[in-house]
Amino acid sequence: MKSLLISGNTGRLMSVLTLFYFAWYSAAAAVDERPNFILLMGDDHGWSETGYNGHPHLQTPVLDEMAAAGLRLDHFYAAHPTCSPTRASILTGRHPNRCGTFHPGWSIRPEEVTIAHVLAQAGYHCGHFGKWHVGPVKTDSPTNPRAMGFQEFVSHDNFYEMNPQFSRNGGPPEQLEGEGSMVTVDETLAFIERAKQAGKPFLAVVWFGSPHEPYSGLAEDLALYDDLPKSYAEREVRLTSMETGRPTTRPLRDVLRERYAEITAMDRAIGKLRQRLADAGLSDNTLLWYCGDNGSPSSSGRATTPFRGQKALMYEGGIRVPGLIEWPEKIGNPRVSKVNGVTTDMLPTICELAGIPAPGRPLDGISLASLISGIMTERPRPIGFWSYNAKRLTQGDSAAKPYIEPALQEGTTPLVKYLGGKRTRSFQNYHQPPIEESDYAGPRVLLDNRYKLVLQGDGEAGQVELFDLRADPAEENNLAEIELEIAAEMKGRMRTWQNSVLQSLRGADY
Image (cartoon, rainbow, N blue to C red; front, side):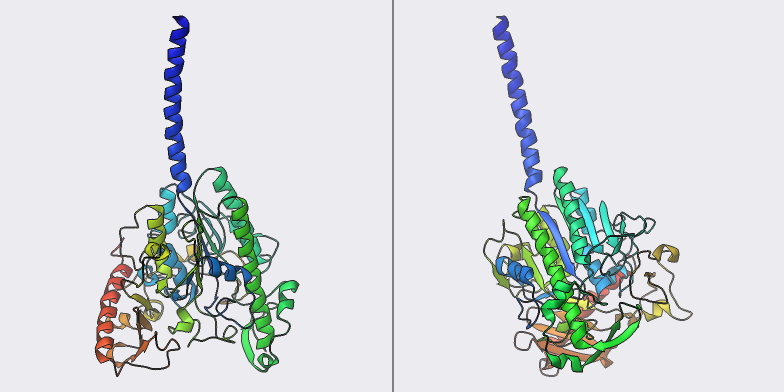
């Protein structure tokens, strides 16, 4: 009897342990099955500056391999033709004007809900690495990466070069030896290992400082571009000196040699990241998304391009950027998509793929999950772009009240380039006064599946351009006086969208 009793108790105990084990295993498996996300972004890296897009000189074998193996987004856009606004769009899924991130060096607002807030609440381990540029990264900044939802960060207020000085989790700047992009990836890999050891899915936002000027390069990368066309040497360009941190003039050939070396070094760093993911068995279940933050600059990046315009302009050369998604488990066959996508789409896409709701406030992005799965063939609604004219917020007697105490907006991480007589960055953001008609001004675009409306200036007196991008991707033929109904309908939709954005800017979403 005793042995039978023991046997029976043991059997019941084993049954309980078995049930507990399978419950634990199921929960662990559910966590393990959630995808990891890595968002990579080059700084000032325009659409044409990749080998896979046909650049005659650049060597980008890793990006080319990603394009050949995954989902190539040939019609992918930055939400703004400059950097800080685009970064705010990725974090929030919203147009940057909603939170007052109008131009480079304008911070995000502390009340914004970011992709890191959302994923961290769902159990993801979230880290930021590299260029932040939506506020200072110091500890007491209300818009540093930790304040905006990231549990870990090794970040810089702005761009950086060789041997960068980063803030680790808000601490004082510390110099990390090495090529800037590789240093950034090495910190990312250490973070991924910590997340893996903790058994958590992760979000890594990796924003490189390259290829933003001033330029430098490793000898091995510079040597790849020793034979650039001699005709490039006939053009002089103005940019920042690595030696003085102030403007200088140099031959374009020398400048491009260094710029291309930076892009190749960034490409190699991405290759190391991909290889380590594969070695760790993480590749299949990790979505890797690469893009640029705006088009190439006019001073050094437009040696060859099929598009009109450059950084800071609303034409294709200013806002269309490289876009690549690699996810072996879900993208088994390589594809090229001509569906319009934009950086504001990242948050809603990731939320859907992670199985969590997006923030309950106006979003300008849409989920591209059905594009990744091969179902979406057209974008269901147009994309709005807008460079807000912020002069009335900062100038004269009517200057607006700062949104954040100015002392909290002072950056700490050093960089080569002087701005305002110093080698650190300051940020700004302002409370928006009551809306006036002039607040609707500034260069702006509405982009649908075929047509692109470009408005410049104020109201009806401003310039109106309409391009059929399917027939005219170089934006050479203005159809505004021919397709009057299309232009008028798109102008109306633009105004409706601007009304929504301005309501957010006034704080309605907080």
